[in-house]
Length: 92
Image (cartoon, rainbow, N blue to C red; front, side, top):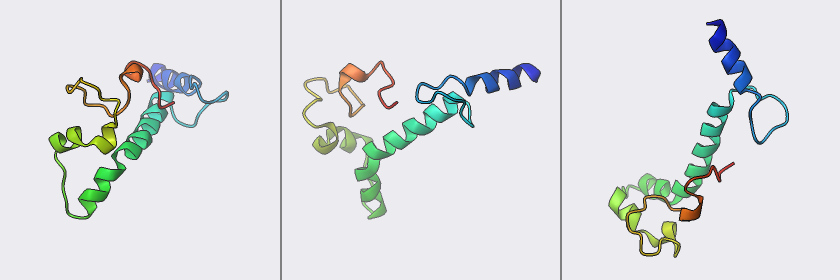
């Protein structure tokens, strides 16, 4: 258990956004930031569902207001952001 506590404590000092320790370990904080960012992308869909108009995954994939013009010809992509940021943590 001491090793787990030490690891968790050390993770509090690894944030790319802060020069001091965080009150939570960095992976948990990054997950929280990612969820906040995702909520921004999903806001139009949350509004529709609260109005009683549920949306399917396929309908979301076809929605130009989320995808914009960056989708190009690659219809297999499931992410609304540009494919040049797929392999980085751009939300930080």
